[in-house]
Length: 291
Ligand code: G4P
Image (tube, rainbow, N blue to C red; front, side):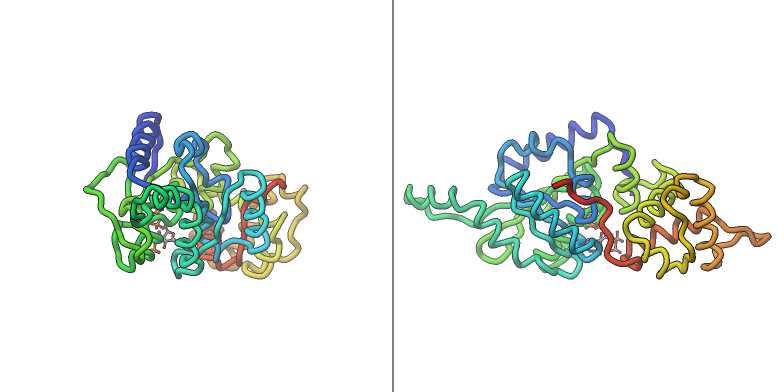
């Protein structure tokens, strides 16, 4: 996956979404449950300009359920938005999307009924940054494979409506948004979940950040999964050489070695990130709301 967002891409992505907005009633804003704000496009409110919106926190199977509950409260209290946790890969929670979307569209529908217009199926568009699960959700709701995973921004094809039951229609191509790049800490989180190209940031630096974060909030993940004994304190971990020691211990345990018996830090970084992404370290959220 290569994403390089330049101003030209952003303008085009924005224009494409705004074209699609003309066709739809409700937006399904897909976020990663592990970093809901970090995986949120910074200009989303402006781009959607008041369209009713359901926030969907995907990959909830990988996120810390306690933190996800806090996020739902956060979106409701600070943004007035309904947020629904789902796991698009298995379909957990997906059934709840239609009733929530209906609720968001109810005023429009009632107005149509008052005018004597027979309401048609609600038209919805899924939007989100790369890798957040847009194609997976479209495919799940369609009950078949529709969009190629890893769609590239700027690649358009004839648009079609996918019937989801009798009450909703989904645009078959999602709106692709760019992630939030300004903050380097967010960059590391996005790289950890696989939403920005690892080549933009050094793999070992991404792993460094993850290890520091895990040591602070999920020490058991390091101790149980990787057998790290005597985890250094957070203060000690501020020193890069101490993080390297932890990585070397992990690499040695897992046999990620180069000739001469030294630990291969790149391989170790990859395996830590792979296991984090696949949930082998447990359900971990990388960001909690400031309520
Ligand atoms: P996108 O269209 O927004 O770019 O995302 P896409 O659906 O391609 O999903 C990106 C990756 O996230 C895929 O994995 C997909 O299987 C995975 N995914 C989507 N939803 C969920 C979810 O709710 N839970 C979990 N655990 N994973 C999810 P991949 O490794 O890129 O591909 P593959 O292994 O599925 O082939």
